[in-house]
Image (cartoon, rainbow, N blue to C red; front, side, top):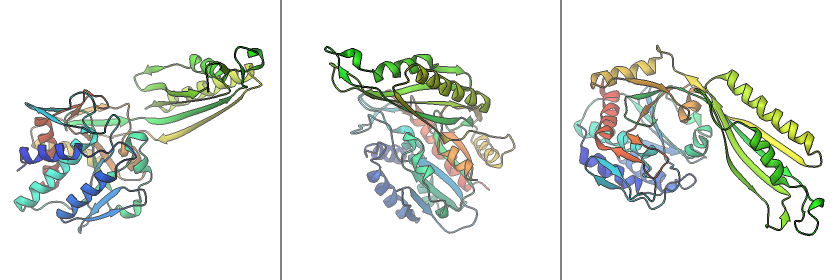
Length: 359
């Protein structure tokens, strides 16, 4: 039986471990110790992902990521009735540690009850929040599982991600010509002005139900009294529709081409890259059926909906590991308002336990 106090304690303990992207080592060590105590053979691949295995054929993968977004250092969880939150100065880290805690509680509960269960392989990745980096660098030779449940969705566990987009990154560097801004500005060529010309001509935000575009960072210039010579900016666009994705890509390239013609003395270099590919779950997908059937036994109705975000499931599905993303009880992810509903966290652990013990 899932024990609420133990589950909440585990969750609060692991969110106190600082693990913003790039700082996951403490979390990896804690997980290694916990999983070893549960009887797993734990390995780390060259990227630092944690892979826990055991004997048994056709294991089911349970997966979550170890990193959090910022501000994620010095998290102090506060329990207020049936809600876990912070004081509002940091995120909570429920993304994705609510999923981690639910997996750990389910395994502990099964072990203490002496229940038989399906063989399992656990994969906890680094750097998910900065572009699914851990999953993209996962040593697949260490992974035997061919189907996976990924605990990384917003909301309750019965909220299932039915589709996820292709994500394209955009990086642009502009080299103009420096000059003294007060003495001889006419000799300069402002890289900031050129960047603003490109950015202002690009659409921003939601283009349709399946497509978004965003310019997220811009850096450049040196001092206020110099015409800026160098500027870089980065952005992204994503869609669950390949035609829409191609149209945005062509619009971006055409915009840069037109601005390049206007400022022929500048050097404009752009790089576009596919960070992960879209997927859409078929109603007859066996892993999806498995998840929905287990939810039904718990009295939870499966709620399907597409996502504008990506998860490690995008990478796993491309690698031939059938993957389904479920909610993990977290609300308001990536904000200092992030919180976890304890009843939903319990349901996530119950689902995980039933997933492994029901035949």
